[in-house]
Amino acid sequence: MDWLYVAVGLVILLLGGDALVRGAVNLSLRLGVPALIVSLTIVAFGTSAPELLISVGAVLEDVPGIALGNVIGSNTANILLVLGLPALLAPMHTSECDSRRNYLFMIAASLVFIALCFLGPLTWWHGLILLAGLGLILGDTFRAAMSHRANGSGCALSEDEEEVEGADPEMSGTKITIYIVLGLIGLPLGAELLVEGAENLARTFGVPETVIGLTLVALGTSLPELATTVMAALRRQADVALGNVIGSNMFNLLAIMGITSLVGPLPVARGLLHFDLWVMLGASVLLAPFVFCRIDITRGWGFLLTALYLAYVGRFVFI
Image: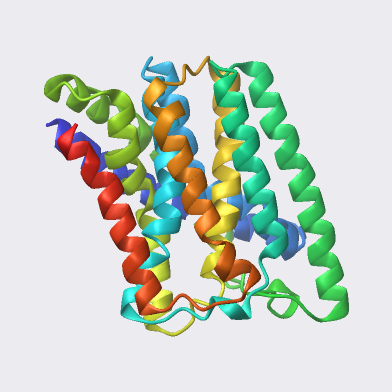
């Protein structure tokens, strides 16, 4: 039953997150909120809602290791697996996207997060620092995006940002309401099921909750990004995958960990401090050649990234 709870909870989370994004995006656009602002805020928050709900739920259920493991493991999976596996199917022309600015922000966010973990347990004041960093980055990103649009340049900016994820100009008010209600109901329900199932599995098999978060939960919450990037790679449209992963990782560290730290204290396990945080940072540093040298992620690079992730996850089998 615990495996079933995890699987059903994950499915409900994914469907609920998608419903909330679609409903919130179309409601905002109907109310006249610029599409660019919707992309930078509502879509970002909505697509990270499963991770946020899982992390908050884990703290409330007194299994904070799942919360920390979820974010650290997701960030590692986003780089090594979400970029590596699709590249095995088709090379990703990431050289066409300039992600240098956001990449430096991601590295800075990673270093600040690691420093705060060593000053842990993470509490409300750590959370405020992370959220302050998020605010600064969102403000800078918004100004840069507006400047790019004014100059008619930039990567992944569509005409008037009409291609916002989930946007449908023909969607009725009733359908928008249904999407929002389903999302608001599905997200907490799915998070509750997944956290309860993961917690019980950890106890049943004697596996530390942090390991469950780093592997099972982290991989599950990275599936939407993986599925999207695989389909984009098959369609030869994965040029902005690198930028999307960088943005997602920044949001995980600053927003999800920032909000979760306000809910309750997060003790940082010794294993995270001595190994997993540095793996996350090392994976982030691996992106430097693709970002600064504008190198495409070819099948060879995809094999290397995927192999590194399998080796990282495989170590837990031998613990």
